[in-house]
Image 1 (tube, rainbow, N blue to C red):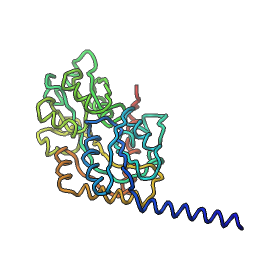
Image 2: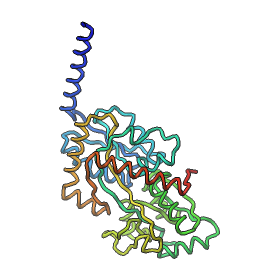
Image 3: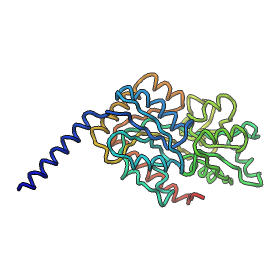
Amino acid sequence: MKRIALALAAGLVFCTGSAAAQASWPAQPVKWIVPYPPGGSTDMLARLVSHKLGERLGQPVIVENKAGAGGNIGTDFAVKQPADGYTIVMGNIGPISINPALYPDLPYKPQRDLAPVTMLMSVPNLLVVNPALPVRSVQELIAYAKKSKAPLDYATPGAGTSLHLAGELFAASAGVRLTHVPYRGSAPGLNDTVAGHVPMMFDNMPSALQLVKAGKLRALAITSTARSPQLPDVPTMAEAGLPGYEIAGWFGVLAPAATPKPIIERLNKELLAVLAMPDVREQIGAMGGIISAEGPADFGRYIAAETDKWGALVSKAQIKLQ
């Protein structure tokens, strides 16, 4: 009986201490892991939101870039951190919903190892080319690629990203040969496309938008089902002659799976408040993004549906990493 009483007392102390820790959260800065290098859409969004989130939490939210392996390295790092609310990760379609189908030895399982907090935004993707390439439309690009003796190179922010699949889907839909050139994030790929080292690139609109507006890249098509108000003259892939072609990126916040529910709920509440701020909405709109704030359960269901969708596409198209 004495042992039982001691065990119960110890358990009560632990629960009381845990509850107190949750009630006082956050008592120190929060790390926000971005599994890509600075300069891309994922990083841009995290830096836009992190400062205002920190103001609402009363503690700094510090963005840490941990890039590599299509977002897998940073995501796996976040998964392995203590589930105490002091680590969150920016998840997107690649490491959360696509990579489980592309990487047989993925060191984490997103739906098992991560707790959804909220979606932040969705974005269309762009097919852009170096202005020196003698094409001004998707159909001209297809004709150019078919005449080329060698496959055309196309850049993306990394293997296994939605942009990688966008290129593979384009090649299959258009009946052309393309060679994938993966980079460690958007910025280096865009730099090489602007410099003419690669002729074309698939990228998220927020990363490429200003280069298109500056005339350093030419946008041939948008991958969403509707044109963007940011680039109203750029047709959708369907309008450009590839019906049924539709790929959009998305970005959201997750935490290690065992993070206490009250902390997840607080994070969700504060992030939704940040997304409701007029200046944040204006900046996300200017990036070409669409705010998609929602609760943890809804975000979890969306992740499950996206994982099923992309797993089926990878299997059907027999897409494999080289």
